Image 1 (tube, rainbow, N blue to C red):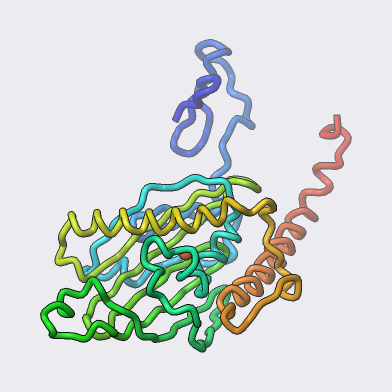
Image 2 (image 1 turned 180 degrees about the horizontal axis):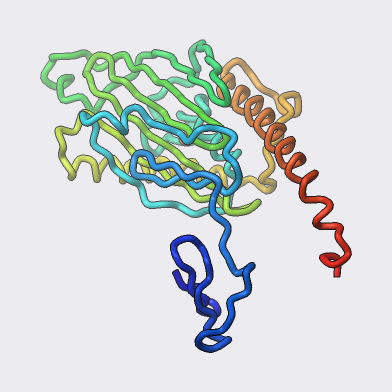
Amino acid sequence: MRCGYHGWLYDVDGQCIEIPALGEGATIPPRAKLRSPAAIALDHGMVFVAIEEPLTPAPSLLAANDPEFQIGDLPVLTTRGSAALLADNFLDMAHFPFVHAGTFGASEAREVPNYSVERAGYGFTAAYEHEFANREDPGVATGQRPLIQRRRLTYRYSAPFHLELEIEFLDAGGVNVIGFFLAPEDDETVRIYSSLWRNDLDGSLERMREAVDFEIAVIEEDLRIQSKYERLEMPLDVTAEVHTRADKTTLEFRRILAEFVEKAEAEAGRAGEIRTPDLSAPSRAL
Ligand SMILES: [Fe+2]
């Protein structure tokens, strides 16, 4: 790998082996070495890199490892925003009829049914069943099934910013999974990695392409709302905002993220104790 700025060349272990500006055969400074990540995990076609020692396991999606499902990757979106506020948005259950009126939200119920959240480690699962108008089901036109059908939504979150929504069509059959993996670039920019897994498209690439395009339109609706935020911080103090019973997922998300941040800061503090004497050494201060 060669750096695009000064052309320094690195081998696969991260050791610099050539500095063009010094000429051929020059001695390479020992510190010209890239740091290796603390951990790397591969799952469902993605590479997860932990620069520091990871505090949670890499996310794993059940559907992604099930051969019944076909995958559709959305293009990676880089946008102004905060990973926390976006995760909050994707976990939110009350915004469909308002934010998504242009795609699927117009016929969605405004009232969020009662549901519970099950915590596990630095993550949770929340699920509920409700009735909805299944206008895409060809069985409705043929009279095989009624328009109003049952659907189960299951949200799974794992810290810091990985989440999935599983939609099970209990009458028409079929499962759709939407995965979101949010990578903050800095305080104001975030990358959104998102994929769909579906077992109801009979392997059709065309139908998957349509599903991906539809999902992009849905995310664009979310991003329109996100772009209105002037401040991108999300309060982790659950008393700082007004929450209702409809916000159990996003409340639990804040609690978990607060614990996660606390743990990360404690780990960083411990690492700082070791580094402190080094940093304050007079030879380094100059
Ligand atoms: Fe949304």
